[in-house]
Image (cartoon, rainbow, N blue to C red; front, side):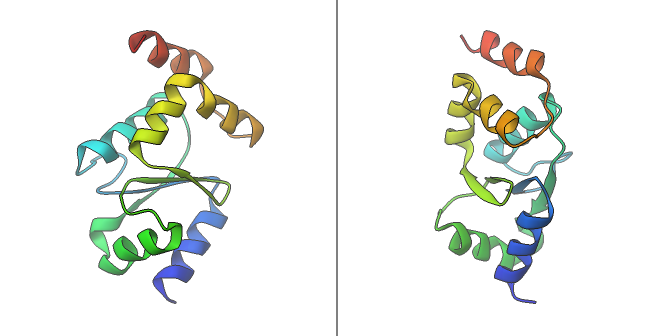
Length: 119
């Protein structure tokens, strides 16, 4: 299976996927840590893919999304964005809406706490 096929299979088989450096329990860069931290804090179940473990996936995900940086968040097979976009969406409430519209379970109180802490 090619990297592109593996990526496609992963994003279609899981509701929420984060391609990141490291894992959700041990992120290997600040940006990956921030996005994984938001998802973990909000209680979102997600599949993590450590791009450092596979050079083909690391390059392949950039080609797949036509987005140059990692982390990359996918919801229901759609590319949502990287760290800055996810941070912005979290603070604006757009991420809550995206999860709600897609039937993704998350903790609304936790999302509100993030916004309060960053107000």
